[in-house]
Length: 204
Ligand SMILES: Nc1ncnc2c1ncn2[C@@H]1O[C@H](COP(=O)(O)OP(=O)(O)OP(=O)(O)O)[C@@H](O)[C@H]1O
Ligand SMILES: O=P(O)(O)OC[C@H]1O[C@H](OP(=O)(O)O)[C@H](O)[C@@H]1O
Image 1 (tube, rainbow, N blue to C red):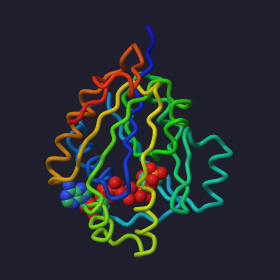
Image 2: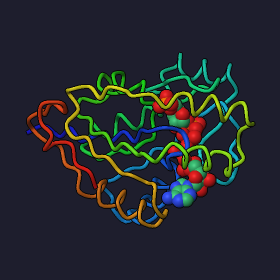
Image 3: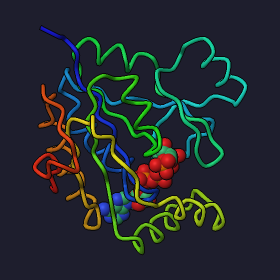
């Protein structure tokens, strides 16, 4: 029997609350040895408020990438992002590994991790703008650019499960939904096509 686990990609537009819900779920699920929350590497200093990540300079990131330190990388907002190779190793050992990634890197994630589930976090566009402004991490111009990335995107048909969480309500409600989604996701043996099989697309 295969020991392959599951990679759970958390995606969605900037300001939807991916990091907030991940932080709450990671706290609640800290006792689950089978669930791993990935610490990302980003070429940005941590702000101490949202995500707790590792930081590398752009040249150090490129060197680490060349040395095989990452199993998945992408670029967005003028920054480089990487998931450590240990995330791939944990999936291969049978773990459920959860990380916030770019909507544009789902195809690469399928290559890196044979079994992929997607949790898509959404919120009303007006709420996204308010939250990005309220967070205060970006300039107004940067915030505008982030909002302009909120376009429809395709979830690859090979994705095993695609769960939508509308985080337009309280953060506590969003976190509860995130905990349920992560705790209950399992690896389906039969890939399901999102477009052809609405049953695989669960609104929580
Ligand atoms: N349900 C919620 N209610 C109110 N505020 C929220 C909610 N969820 C998140 N926030 C706040 O909205 C802001 C954006 O949240 P967060 O940083 O988690 O979003 P994100 O999807 O990770 O965005 P990005 O992709 O830009 O990193 C933060 O200040 C966070 O505290
Ligand atoms: O818009 P797309 O490509 O889906 O996401 C791009 C990147 O933007 C966000 O980064 P950050 O956490 O705000 O730095 C996401 O976490 C993702 O890594």
